[in-house]
Image (tube, rainbow, N blue to C red; front, side, top):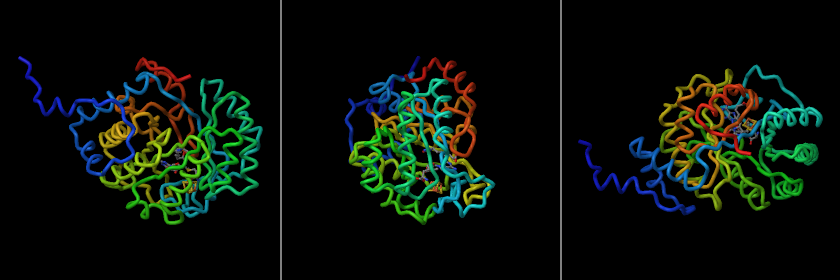
Length: 331
Ligand code: SAM
Ligand code: DTB
Ligand code: SF4
C-alpha cells in the first residue's frame, strides 16, 4: 500500500501564486538549495508552468564581433590579454560579416542575435560601429543583444535609441567570491552598468558562472543579488565554467551536476518570470543532464556550434534533443 505523504511534505510542495519578490534573504535562498532534490524540482517546475509554456525553448545565437586582447583579468576567460591562451585576436568585424552570420542564424530559425566584444567598455567610436550592426541585424527582423563591457548612462541611452533589445552584463558570482576571480572591475561597477541599462529601458540579461571553486553559499548569494535587483533581469544566463587552457581556472574540479541543476531550479523559483538560460558548458553535459535543467526551469539556450570563442553543441544535436523531448523553439 502506498504511504500517505506527511503534512510537512504537503506544506513543502505547496506552490504559492506568482509574486515577484526582490527582498529574498539568504536563509530563504539557502533553504531552497537544501530541499530534497525532487521537492526542489517539483517546486521549480510548478513555478515554471505558472509563467511559461513548459515545452518551449527560446534560442539565441552568439557571435564574437571583437575577439581577444581584453585588458580585464577575468580568470575564467580565453580573451583576457593576461591569460596565455592560444586564441587568435581579431579586430572589430566588418559590418557585412556580421550581417552574413545573422542571416545564417535567421535561416536556421534563430530569433535573437547576440554580439559580444572583448572590451572593458566601448569607446564612442566603437559604439558607433556596433550601433550600425544593431540596426542592420534589426533590419533582418531579428531581436538584438550585445555584451560590450561597462556602459555609462549616455551610452546605454544611445543603444536604446538604436533599438537594442537586450544588454548582457553578468554579475558572474557572489560579491564575496568575486575578488578571487576578477580584480580589474568591481562588483559595484557591474551593478552600476546593469542600472544604467535598466534605466535606459533596455532588457537586462544578467547571470553568472558556476564551477569556479565557489561554495554553495556563493551560488546562493549570486542568485540573491540577481533576484534583489530593483527589477529581475529579463534573462538570466547560468554558465558552467568552460575550462580554457592557459587561464588560471583551467583544471579546477568540475561542479557536481546535481548542484548545477539545483542552481537552475533556485533561479527559476526566485525569478519566476525571467528566462533562465542554460548557457556555456553544454558540450560537456549529456542529454539527460540538459533535460533535467529544462525540468528545473531552464527555458533558453545558445544555439549554433560556437559560443564566443569555444564550442557549443552542433545545431543538429540540439534539434534532435528538442524533438526527442517534444519541445519546440520559441518563435
Ligand atoms: N567583455 C564583456 C564583459 O565581460 O562584460 C562581454 C563579453 S564576456 C565574454 C561575457 C560573459 O561570458 C562573461 O561575463 C562571463 O560570464 C561569460 N564567460 C566568459 N568566459 C567564460 C567561460 N570560459 N566559461 C563560462 N562563461 C564564460
Ligand atoms: C553569457 O552569460 N554567456 C555567453 C554570453 N553571455 C555572452 C558567453 C559564454 C562564453 C563562453 C566562453 C567562450 O566561448 O568564450
Ligand atoms: Fe574581457 Fe569580458 Fe573576457 Fe573579462 S569576460 S576578460 S571583460 S572579454
